[in-house]
Image 1: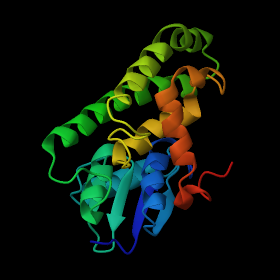
Image 2 (image 1 turned 45 degrees about the vertical axis):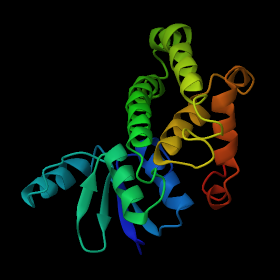
Image 3 (image 1 turned 135 degrees about the horizontal axis):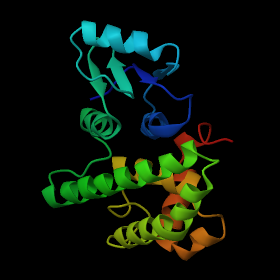
Image 4 (image 1 turned 60 degrees about the vertical axis):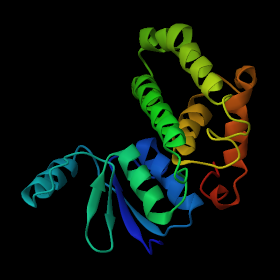
Length: 206
């Protein structure tokens, strides 16, 4: 099944945060979309009130809206929904592989939350140091190990899945540095593979 177009709403600018994770999937799948930035300070209170007044109970972003007006919220559920809708980025009739992806997605969510705190507080030297000395290596070790379980650059091997976009976004933007990521060859292979995907070339341009 194809999706002719959709709207993606988010409270960070184009190409940032969880919105960018969804954009990676949309760009790779060649799904046309309109990105709608909602300024958190000035617009979000009004938009949130409007959503709740319309009986849409998810007062959070990101959110997508399909052509038929149906809305869906939360980054990972959106990505799973889109994957099922278009028949890509999910294993076919393999519950073990599907559970494996869901587990990686859950761990990736933990990693994203930790790194988001660091990014959003660049002047907090104590927080930066804590991440560098403690949390960073834990997450890189964990995901390097998880990405060793199947032969190939992606979580399931040679076929890309929705969770690879999520892990890529964290690893590519928050890697320790270009040299030290080589210490994590499976993560480095994932970053390299997604960087090379033809449909992502324009989106990934700096």
